[in-house]
Image (tube, rainbow, N blue to C red):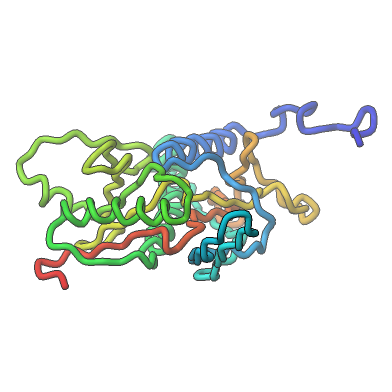
Length: 297
């Protein structure tokens, strides 16, 4: 049913009431995540209600016996066992910049650099949690070298995906920074960096290889891009305005809400962020975790 005539919609009001600094923050955050989605191969973020429980599963297929000519075909059993759960909740963050800092360093350095650091930390928080979660993947093995670890991680993931009849899929691999550069030695190679994430394309059989120090040395992690989803809570979903809380959001995908205000009692400028984001994998046994061991069993 359409809205009543003359209803004041967001589209009609435009951005006249939005603060430029808040618009800039949420726009940069959204652009950063758009770039990261391209790197990780995430098709689109999935909007969820606050308090949603995200569940990873382990999948197995038990084929039924073949039947004779003209006989009814038996169903093969497909089993999905819950393997990991995580609540998707809205989180609140705040930073403050003092009047003295602005006086000493200037607004551009004190405020803009503070916002930039705030944005980077929020993004890093989401990625760090995902790296920790990815290490719980159940497709495990050990290999003697870095190259074999990457090759077998890619191979195991593709094999698992094919057994589930999901196709081969493009594989993304996560490796430790020092492991990669130890493997490269003196070889010249060009990496790319986007939104603070260093990566290579089409390297050692992986569509994308993400290089990070959040993965422990001696570990190689891989999964298909289709197994990674970005879930989020829209900060504008709930009736926060009824509490007198006004957060700026931007675009069709409202990944974050941001508000800036002055605190006259303490002569500081406060920045508030509201965010509910998780990178999650649907199949825990679709994540390969390979250990590099000079003497693998």
